[in-house]
Length: 79
Image (cartoon, rainbow, N blue to C red; front, side, top):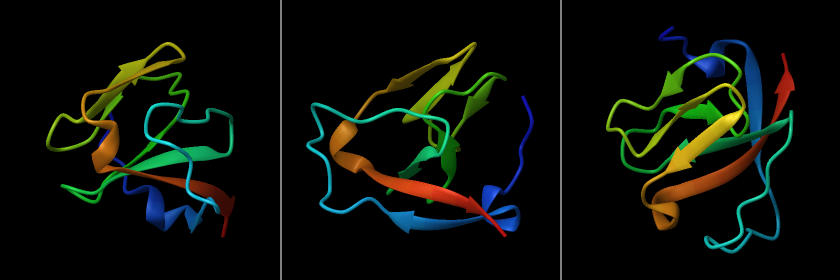
């Protein structure tokens, strides 16, 4: 698993209005920021990815969110 700080590559902007925690959107430009450890993970990770605290983890296009209430949905734009 790569440990890349996504903030070095992308600027992130909160999705407004904030989506319901029970219905999180996905997409190539949609990312989830863990509110516990502040790491950012793509909503459809194609390589193995996880946040430091383990709230977000996945790979092969699937992401598992253990606590959706502790996630901020953001849109990423290349710097």
